[in-house]
Structure formats: C-alpha cells, structure tokens
Amino acid sequence: MLHTLQNEYLTVQIHEKGATPWSIKDADGTEYLWQGDTRYWRNRAPHLFPYIGRMPGGKYTLRGEPHCMNMHGFARDMVFDVKGSSDTHLVFSLTNNEETYNLYPCAFCLSIRYRLEGRALSITYRVENTDDKPMHFGIGAHPGFNVPLETGAAFEDYYLEFDAVTDAKRVELSADCFVTGELTPFPLTDGVRLPLTHDMFDNDAIILTDMATSVTLKSSKSGKHVCASYPDMPYLGIWHMPKTDAPYVCIEPWSSLPSRHGVVEELTTKPGLIALESHGVYTNEITFRFEG
Image (cartoon, rainbow, N blue to C red; front, side):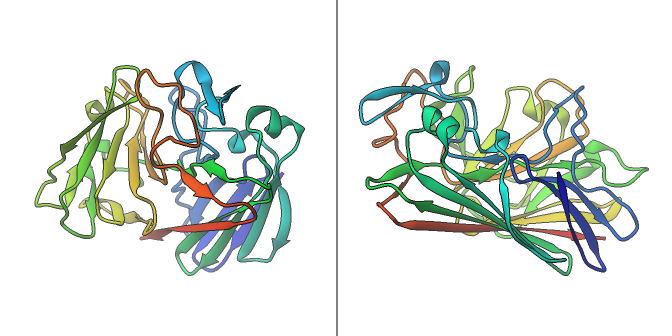
C-alpha cells in the first residue's frame, strides 16, 4: 500500500513494503526518483538494515553462532506498520518477528520517519534495542535518482558537487565487492566536483569516506537538482548498475561498510558497526532537497 505526503512543492509516495520511497514529484510533474526499470535495477530507494553490503556466502556469526542474511539486510523486504501520519509526516515501524529473528537474532524496533518541509524530505532512522544484550548493526539509504532530470540533457552533463573541499578517500573493493582494507585518495575536480560517466561504475560502487557531508546532483543544462545531506553518516556510496548505460545514479549515505574480503564477520567485533546497548536508542537523519 502506498502513502502520500504532499505540499505546494512536492508529492512523495512511500510504500509500506520496506517503508520505501516510491515516487518524488515536483509541482510541474518532474519525477526525481528512479522508477525501478528492471532492465537496469528493479529497486527504487531501499533502506539498508541491519547490514550494508555483501557477506561472504551470505554468512556471518553473532556471539560465535553462525547465521545467514542477504545483501543489505532484510528491512527492504518487510512490510512496516504505519504509526502516525499527516499530510507532511509519516512514521513507519518494524518490530522483530519470527522471520527477522531467524535471520538476525536480536529484539529491536526500527522506526523510519518522513518529514516533508518545503522542498526538503527528511528521513529519520530510529533503532531501539529492546533486547537484554547489545545489538550490532548498520543502517543506510540507497535511493536512485533519474539522470537526466530533464529532456535535452545527457547523463554525462551531470556531476556531483560536494559542499566543501576535503581529503576524500575511496574505500577499495575486491573484484567480488568486498572491502580490501585499503583507502586511497580520491581527488575531485576543483576539490569538490565528480563528473558522471557510465563507465565510472564498471567496477561497481564508488564508496567514499572523509568526504563532505552534503552533495548535490546537478547539471549546467538543467535547473533541477537534488541535494543530499547526511551529517552523521561516515560513508557515501555512489552507484548505478555496472557496465550499463543506466539513466540514474544512487546517492547512498551509510553508517558502515560491507564485509571484508575473505572474512565471515563476527558482528560483535566487525569494525564500524553501531554497538547499541541493551534498551538503548540510536537515531540518524538524512535530508534530500529537490530544487528546480
């Protein structure tokens, strides 16, 4: 079932399955969100929880016990409950159940709150550990945005522009997309700009750290752009389906990284995961602003 947020600038639809953004249109009907064309990528904007990225063979351990979980966790496949709604606010909730416990034996409540203010859509993650032992997890977003956003422009006319000059580093991946442990400098044009080309994704995602905490998808040939702000996320994934001419780009703020190459991770010791104490609460907010 779809739920709608609307104001004078934007109409946003969100699906109960995965609490997933389904459509983001402005007042003139421009669709900003990738619409899931199966020729390239069937998804649109899944939420990643309780793990980000791949696990070797889909396997991990928790306190020494072996378990299995699919890439990017299970939240994207679960139907959330609606806990509150208005024209500009929606709150979705997922509580552990038998299905989630078989994949991830932890007791939790995950809330995803949407707030529409002007041209901005804010998404707040709230994780409550309802268990009597610590909980270890990752969380993040994976939205795809149409490129180009207007007719008359091409994919290569667009670029990502960060809001500050930093010494950004790339998290290097193995050929099978696991973390190698190596960070390499990732220089940007004029210190802030990353021009988009299809072949930049031929080896899968670009994952950055030590980057600026806001980035804008824009083009000199279009007045429409998307700004993503993620002040408390230490990683940013940038992706489209490798070795294709896919007309979208994903801008993905993450709290943590995929598994290390050749390592079946023990979640209690995996570097970078959030360690949430018993009955503790974790929150993180990201915001997307749509201009034009």
